[in-house]
Length: 330
Image (cartoon, rainbow, N blue to C red; front, side, top):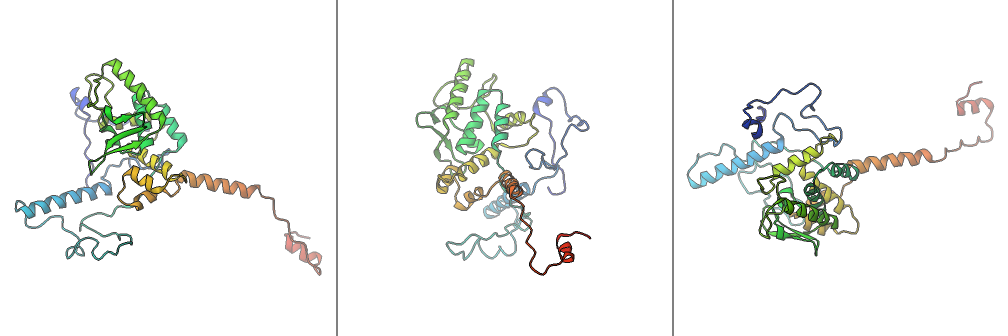
């Protein structure tokens, strides 16, 4: 995975038309893979697998071979062994309560993943993306993601009975625990949701409490999938030239909640469903846009200050010493 390029597949719609190869990109029409996006600052998708993808694959394969080694249905030795310092004991052995967990290398061939600062969508650019949407369903989705802070897959799993406008709650199924949790949402979210539902029901979308909440816009009616929602967001950003993802909407919601001084951080942890409060604390740091804006304002205040007056010459200064003091020549 570290040396080979990622496989490029033809879209299934193109395969139905008999197209088996991707067309060659036009010169100047595409962004170079791996470079930073000029709008968001995020790196575009590169030709190689990212370090986080390789680390995830290493974890999955090591767990797979460990399971079959214990069951006696696989090789005697795991081809993805643990690090030598970890083979003699468990992870975080002799950890003292109240102290942070030190990072420990797990797999011998596991790559190091750099810790990245979550990126949020600035309010002005979020309004631009929201204005680029064409359907009420898409506006309701974006408003729900950025107000509830739920993961994209969690919100897409909601049913029609899970939206409660009276209590301003949307119930989702949490990732990992698979527990149901009701999340508060903004009033505008339910306005867009009602507009979408009325339009969808008139078009013939199935209606029922036990049915899905989000549906496709065209027949045959199917529940909206993650890949379809991601394609919707990608199309909305085509005019802006940005490359935000669905998970950046969750980061945006987390930043907005964590930066509010009247909202306790423990409440934000509950909304985001974080196991540790330290995970929620990463959203307390100011974003790049806020830092640049504050520093520009700082330099503007410095420039607006009156210029300091030159010190008065003390007694005994002659003309030559004053010329040297003020940089003048005779």
